[in-house]
Image (spheres, rainbow, N blue to C red):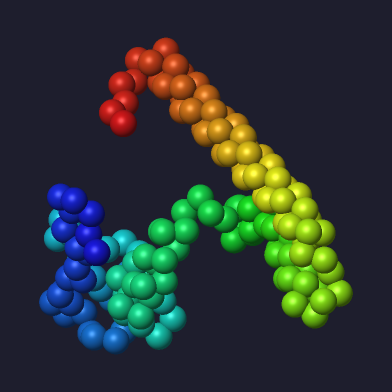
Length: 157
């Protein structure tokens, strides 16, 4: 689904002389960019197009885009994920104990309230971490802009 004012990604036709199913002689992707220029991507093994133009990978690329910011670098789970998993397991065991009559509902309620407080603490830690990351990124961009303006280079963002 394309955003407001954006056209959906399209795979361009095979350029003349480019055999379908095999990469172009120069080893680049056969697809054309939206501007009509040949794509400079490296084709996937056994295909004539790169990952960005592969129909088979389109949905996984969309999903990865949706997950932006939800994972740490190189696909690692974000900070606090292990704590949340542990809390989920403990609450499930507590729920099973209440159903089996081994744990009083009042005790389970108190434990659930404490778990809720822990969840909120993890949430606050994540927000603080995200804000610090953003501040670092802004600082890097500002330093690059200062260096560029000092050297007389004008950049358009």
